[in-house]
Length: 400
Image 1 (cartoon, rainbow, N blue to C red):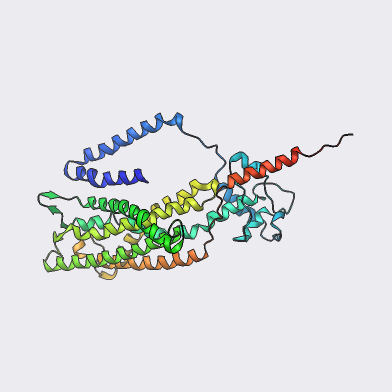
Image 2: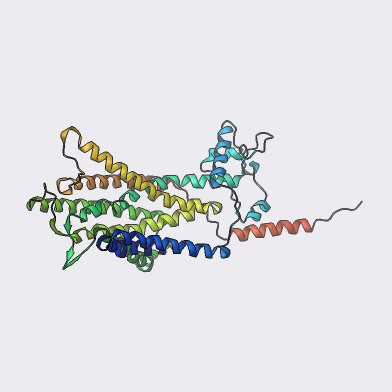
């Protein structure tokens, strides 16, 4: 994350300034050179990397569980979990994984490990651990879906927020601030907020909650979603004020420069960084922490893919709202000329969308079941294996 922050800070400050004031040739040449150097460093370090032995695709493992459960839909589940199919401890020890006990949640998937016939195909019979791993990845999907809308708000930083900046006075003396450079304040705000969160907020909350984290990861994500609501409300009123000044100075039709400092947009950029310190950091930690030991990479991908999906949703909403509001001869909310647009209405719409998303998030978190803590589980597994080996070694073999 630190490297991402530093890269973003460089791109939004120095690189944007070069592209805006020197030229796009140098602006594109610098990141190209940086990527070339990064590839060389990566290749040089190849001999020193630790390669984990592949254990199969997690998607295939999950698909097998779901298919097996569907095939045995009418098969009853035994009351005793010990009757379900499971691999020996040695099988998991070889791969450095942990065996997981059966849980009552998403119980229909337990059908995948019911021994119903002589078939031992992995698409018909799955061990309990594979079923529980699949359950956990499926349990996180509603939380994952709830992060789509906040990711859509993040997409506004480099789109509409920057477009707003082009209509405002960007001068500080003779220096002209590139509108995209305001993204620097998101990164700075996030870095400062993360430090304050760890050093101040957590210590204060520990006194009330007795939680080592201060608050749970889901509570931290919830606060981030609430801040996103505040951001869009602030953006709505800021845009309403910008439009009123544009109308007052007669620059609505010609799309001229609105006599307001670009820094009136600063609150929404700073708040976005604060929201990221709560939501984005907690999101990465949550999906990694809650993913099964053998699916940590897939858990991490949940947090990354939500950002990509958020960008797609942003594009869809922008084009759809623009198209609908221009029907029947009405003036659209989002035009090329922002002074003649109603971006304030669009931001209000996004605020409502965030409120609905928070309600959805609140509901799904009420039903979420945390993954059982398995700290020291490798140690426990080793002890069980040791005991099992000890029993075998002490067995007396009778002589003829």
